[in-house]
Length: 233
Length: 271
Image 1 (tube, rainbow over the protein chains, first blue to last red):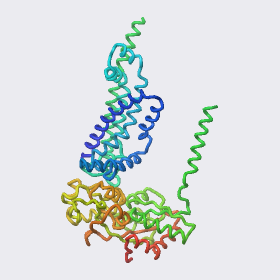
Image 2: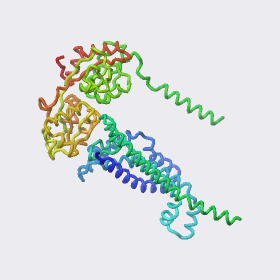
Image 3: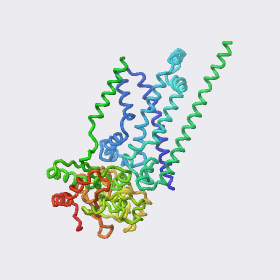
Image 4: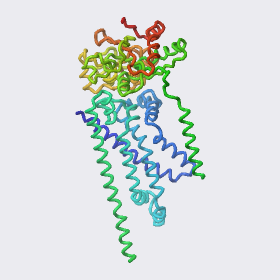
């Protein structure tokens, strides 16, 4: 059995998740600081891919990064890279659809962040980047991990936009989702089932790992509560 | 009370939206499932038919014949089915060989099947963009072609493409080199070539003609490289509007329809 789709899906999802992580956290942090009107508009634009059908996103991507499009044609001319019908074209589509999930989850976590910690850090003379990486991020760990997992899961399961932008080229751009569709179309149900189970297995492993991570991070709070109750006595 | 008013308003808006949505095909409509390559010709014919039978409304569903066959198999409402390949119609015809119709589907109304048009396949490239001078079907196996768009094995044009390359003994070589970009129907192949996303593709000559401004034909398939491309049409057994389908089928066999088909580039089969 040709395992290329498995390896391809995983690498696309992994790269998209890394990109979404940094852009999502960045966007959430800076947009939380902007004035209300700008925040509202930017929020709408950045959350749009969550509401749009993936085929609409695929269509826009094809128009812009296709070989004859306003972005695709110059890139083709200057670098000789084709932005569609390659395995890395999928990274565009998966990043765009996964971004709102990461962004909104992290923004929620940042907005519920206790500002007194931020102020204490500032009164102690700590730099903004120190406060961000060593105080804010660890405190908002739950939300950030949840966002990352959602983004990874969405990137792994993305079909509509990916199939439009990368097509289906076995051995070059096939992902698990496009392979299952093609196998069903060709009537190869048995093989399609195998891929469905592989996908279920991966999703299951990811979710179990996440649950284990979450329970590990929850324990310190319990320890604090216990010591406090002892002191009260 | 305020909350209830808001909720009621939303519900009313939803109902209005649902009622304003176009109605599904009514019993008087003739639902025609046709191969994607017939889009332009059948739309023209529907306009002509409106002048002859103003009460009839033709509702089309254009897609690859394989997709349409699967939809019919799953119970979709279809009065008249026009396939681009005999295989897809045979898979629904109880009189066909058991090897081709293993599920023994019996969807075709006896005595209504006929061959409506004949077509040819051609190798196309994006218009004005053939830097490596692809000139023949055999060039696909060389370095001149990095990607070729073909219909997948459920699409008739994909089946004809596979047949051509198997006869040229190049099919395995092309597959091994991962050169094939599979598309779900012939219009998708056309779109991929027109966008320049692939180096070349194989479509029907009629499709290449409809997209003259975006693609150009390099060559047509050599004689004998594939089975004759003849499109079968038939009325479905459980057609909700069999009478309407019969009337439309008669129109399709008539001279007006034949002129439209010929103008697009189809040939009319002898029988």
